[in-house]
View 1 (cartoon, rainbow, N blue to C red):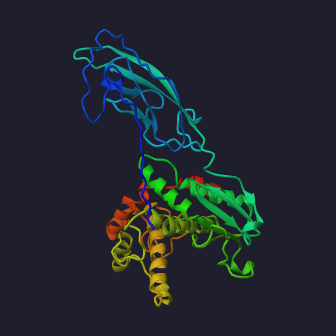
View 2 (cartoon, rainbow, N blue to C red; view 1 turned 45 degrees about the horizontal axis):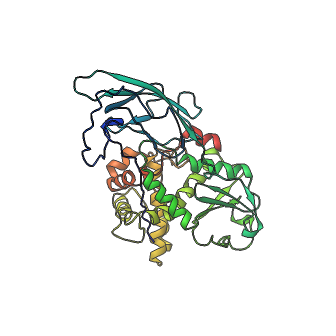
View 3 (cartoon, helix red, strand yellow; view 1 turned 180 degrees about the vertical axis):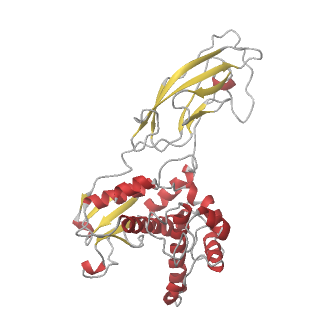
Length: 387
């Protein structure tokens, strides 16, 4: 099942005499004589924008002008010089503000330059943009016996974390924070594509299972489902293990979150690129190149070959994880470097983006065209602080 989204941006039309000369950007407006007007910026000086949005406002003026922006937080805010469209270069993130005061208040100076030939007249206005919290991003931990054998859950950015007995609330919150760290807002993100991922996760009721210690800690089948609308849209467990090293815990969390994101989210939100069961998909072709070039060793999955669909799914899911980990330069952080294999390990022997570009260029292209437009490289210090 594929998802396509339609996004409608409603932008007011301005006649000449409003910001940037006004009119429909697709065609010329009727000329208006504004030579007698006093130059002024007529739009508001304060705006409030929900986090994860790039559009702020359309600036307007008393006559045709060209626009520019400067000031304290101008590194994060841009304006179209002709039409006055004010926007974030990377959508504001309430949890991780990047403004000068780190308080989600972005202050810039907007300049309107008279557009008349030979005119040097200009005016400025200080504009404050406040980024507000999207309270639907992460909920609170809920105890609910309805989803037995899962006793609690936590919703975070269209993914539900279900936990079994023994898992601590702290571990749940840390996993949620690690997932959010993969979704930081940067200028590289395509927010339409990211919304496509969220639509897929939400529509499929995707969830991540979390357990304590390991399978031996529980009786019955680990494949038990929460029930209700939460049925098949899960991959594997994240295990909270006592006594494990920081790197091993990070590796456990990052690997299985990426399994869920790619095998469920990407496999659904993209068209042919991430279809793991198609020999013509970009994912499959990139994986085959990695195998052929000796980068990816799939010998440990030989026992799955009798079931072609299962074999294709598990090898593609693992390949996607290794590819992203290498592009992020995360092998060391996640404890995945083995002695004798350079930057990688016995299964995937390259651990840097530069090596991927050289030895698995199809994989690098897949990463740049898809992953890098949705996921951001999580800050290593932030991830380490969580576990």
